[in-house]
Amino acid sequence: MKRKIDKSSHKPYYLQLKEIIESKIKNDVFPDGKMWSESEISKKYGLTITTIRKSLFMLKQEKKIYSVRGVGYFVNKPKIGFDLTKYLSLGRAIKEQGINEKIEVLSKEDNFKVEFLQDYGIKSNDKKSIKITRLRYIDKIPIDYEEIHLNKKICGNILKEPFDSVIYNLIVDKLKINIRSLEEYLEAGVPTSLEAKLLNLKNNMPVLIIYRVIKDNKGNWIEITKCKIRSDMFRYHIKKE
Image (tube, rainbow, N blue to C red; front, side):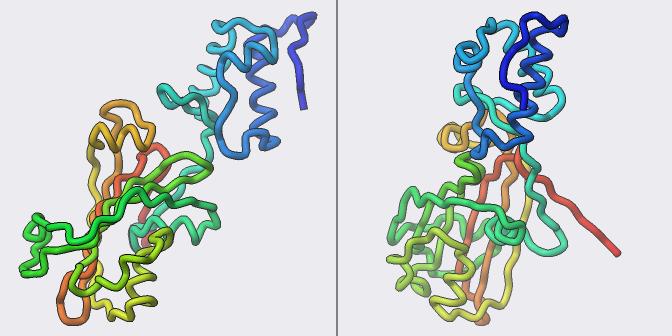
């Protein structure tokens, strides 16, 4: 692995630095995806910021790294794929692909009044929910913000759960609820300023939004969830045979 700049070489410094960073990426020197800052690179290799930015720009052009404003540079690891013919469950897709994740529960709110049932074609008097907001991380990078509503009348006993796993599994395994239908909708959108901050996104950077509605075998709504997912880390595909 190349470790230093050869100042006797005719090869430009920015190309040497580019090769060094590529070697570091190949050898997984940045396991969490976060790279050194420009000032750290300058101290390590004695290069000017202008030279460093030229190397980083080339790596960005080749899609080997990407930057997050105010945060720094990251290794551009392969995107997580979703098969649209199966389901849009982010948690399941991540687990199927053997990717390690961390879920941070930001808030739990009891007796939240749901005002948007009609937006999902739901006619019900059960307008109270247990509201959970979560942030999902992969390699310490926030990739998904979730707002989950569980029917308070039916799921009231679930409030003390940690909510750091697949919610669907909690509903089926913990509450023993028989699921009759699961509907999911996918669209593009723009995060709120708070969501953009939590996801470390630039202003107006688009996100992928998944809406999920789960009903039981009696037609009662059980879960309504809205997930806002970083569009730079996921891709969706359909395969028909």
